[in-house]
Structure formats: C-alpha cells, structure tokens
Length: 421
Ligand SMILES: [Fe+2]
Ligand SMILES: [Fe+2]
Image 1 (spheres, helix red, strand yellow):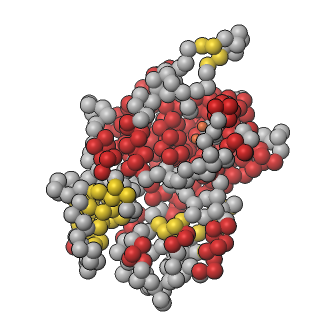
Image 2 (tube, protein in one colour):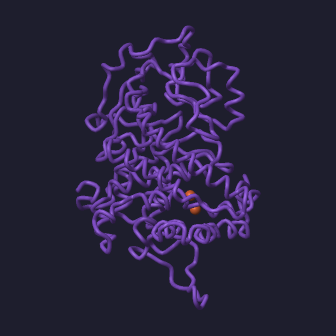
Image 3 (cartoon, protein in one colour):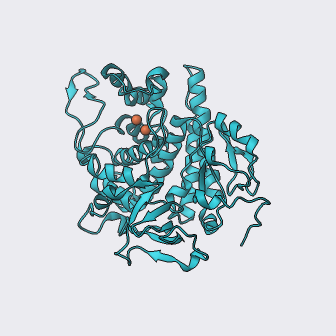
C-alpha cells in the first residue's frame, strides 16, 4: 500500500464505496485523496491531500458551495495513479480566468473581456493535453465549484478541447479554407466555449436561477443569451469563437435558436442547418448539452453520465453532427472510471477501464460478492464485461440504469469513424 492510513480510518469508507464523496457523507477518519481548492481561487487550497478531513470543516465546505471531495478508498487506491494533478492545475487556471473575467463583467457594465487571459489559460490547457495521453476524461472534469455558470463554462472549454483532438482529420476537411495547422488549432474553439454562455450575465438572476419551471415569457428572455453574448464578444475574439457564442444552441437539423436575422434588412432568414453551422459550433453543442445535464442546477440535480448519454442518443435525435457525436460517444464513458456499479448477479464492482467499442461493458474490479460480502483481494476479481456477456451492469448509486443500456450500444456511424483514423 502506498499510503499510510490515518489513525481512526473508518471502516465505513467501504460502505461509501466511492472515491468521490458528497460533502454530507464525510465521516470521521476520512482522508483526502486530492486537495480541496478554494472556490473563489481554485489555485489555492483549503486542505491538502493526505490530511484527515476535520468534521468541523464540513459546514464551511457546505457554505462555500463545495459539493464533493475525493477521499481515499482502500480498494480503489490504484485510481489515484490515473489522476493527473498537472492537468488539474491547468484547469484551475482556466477556471480562474473565467472567474475573474466574469466577475469584472458583473461588477462593471463597461468592463472589457480580458481575452488574452482566456487565450493563455486555454492555450496552456491545450498544450498540456497535446503532450499527455488522457483516457480518463471524467476524472478530470472540474466540479464542486460554487458557481454553475463559471464551472460549466470551464468544463465546456475542457471537453471541447478533448473532443476537438479526436477530430483533427475532420477539422482539416471542414475548415479547408485554413492551413491544416490552423484548422486543427483548438485554442479558438476553447476560447469560444469558455465564453459560450457569457450572455447569461445579462439575464436577470431571478429568471436564470429560478428553481421552478420558467414561463413562456421567461424562457424567451433566456433564449436571448446567445445574441447578448455575441454582442459582448464580437470584435474582441476571433470570428470563429464569436460564432460559437451565437450558434451553440443551433441544432444540426435546423432546430434551435436564436432565429437568424438579416443584419441589413432585419428580415428573418432560414435557420442554419447541417454543415452550414460552423464545425466548432457543432462541437460546442454536443459538449454543452452533456455538461449541462450532468451538472446539478438550481432546478434539477445532476444526472448520471449513462442517463445523459442515453437521452442524447434518443431525445436529441437529429441535434448533432453524426461525426462529432460518434467521436464524443467514443470519448466519454457512460460509467466513469472509479464509479461503483451493481451487477445483474447481485455483486458490486468498481469501473476501472472504458471500452469505446462496447461502452456499456467496461472492465471492472469486484468489490463485493453476490451475498454482499467484501472481497478479500479485489485485484483477483477483475472482470472484463465485454467477455462476460452473462453479466451486465444494472444499478448506479442504487438507481436501475438498465433502460439506458440498449441505446448506448447502437453505432452512430456504420463506417469507420473519423475518431479512429
Ligand atoms: Fe447556452
Ligand atoms: Fe451552456
């Protein structure tokens, strides 16, 4: 074992059976596996890793809007090897750039965007991602920050870079007016995605943060945010980034908003559809919907990735460029690494790897046998579900997820996808 366990380490950690623990489930003796960042400046830390979490810190964490922390779990310590703190540092810098920019916009109506800071932070993240291989996308999504709009913006930026990197060949084809080198430069994609919802800062907070269902009038106000955002960024960021802000709710099948208006005559134009929509906007649409649905909001809890991916493949039929969607489903696992799942034989296991060809059949490590008894040496109980067709995942956090499985196994593209080229 690589880490000494703190005195009084709770055996109930096993009951929690997660590496990520909601703040309200923190128990005496739990030891941090990752530092807890200060929400207003995630480059600083409230508590460092390897420290036992003092229980009197819990109310403060709640007040600061911290939702989850990462704790050690004796059967899952191997997962820590997958966590890349260098990558997390880059993302904290991105978050800090979003936060300082958005705060200055909120405080002064005349504040200008500090585009240079956006560019350098997202450029730093892109350079880091290019140098390292990251198969564990969801382990590195920022979460537990206090402001939905800011953490969502930073996460959409991060996911857009990862998805864009899967699509280099496609970007060279789709952006053929540019040199191949410029066509696959994702800094502009990242900047546009960080800013995609900046127009929401012009929406009254009582509408934006309303916990109940919005009226038709309120919904019409919210739907103004791409146009407001476009007005805020136009001329200050590259045109392709501004297009992301304007078009991130425009769907591949022509649905979506805002309506397209002729700038000279004010007449309504037919909506953009298919490949008329710039490819960076087609990427932003996919990652935006995914991140919004997997993050808790004032009016809804966070959904599990498996449910969101199912809904994207069913309810959102026609919304996405199939090439982009195919690459996304190969990138984002329905069962994130580290998640604990229940199996059809009644046993319990942790997800340890993702199989893009069989997304619902990842590699697992057993934790409890079908009678609920903890397995003495979990490393002896590795299960590749792609080879054990008699078994399937049935529950996540006690919820029956079987209705979501069939849609996730249907290929999007019959031919070899761009993501594999
Ligand atoms: Fe939006
Ligand atoms: Fe968004």
